[in-house]
Image (cartoon, rainbow, N blue to C red):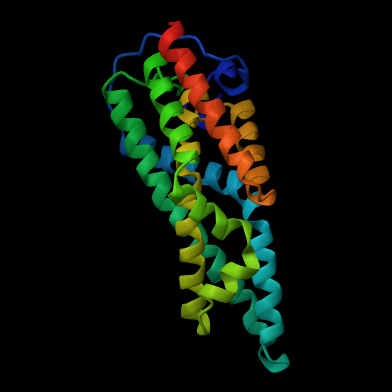
Length: 236
């Protein structure tokens, strides 16, 4: 049952759109333990969703750093790789903390069903879809996505020497990645934050977006999201 969160099988496997509107359950408050569980859940989910699309950057960094090391100092490769990865994942931990805060706020306002973990009204779902769709078409999205699509260019532009520089490089990559993908991650509140079908779909979507550097993918996905938002706004 949803990693101890009370998640139902329906919420974890539903594929329909739009999802049914459910009456929000009375907000009973969170314990510190439940909040920590939510934070761990979000961070693990972000790691699982983002590492596939970040792997080209991580692998290229590993190769470049290994070739830059002298044979006698090759043992420093593993700590450097961990620091780079740690800096990257730190930014997704920050995002996860913000996502948990938003989840708590929406539940408190009875806008998010605490059992199903999706928006309790189509209006909120439409607003999240519209925000993500418009963001897909912005110059900020284009700039951040470009940094993720071309690992060699990113490394050559932002490379800094030393282990401190390696950690800063990971943080910078994480910053671009979060800025690029966080609006899409908010769509987890539309389909259910632990809906396996929704998670897989977003993971593949982000992977394709980063590996196929053609702007029409971004434009098409933005159009689909805006159309889905309009459907929810006007058809319900």
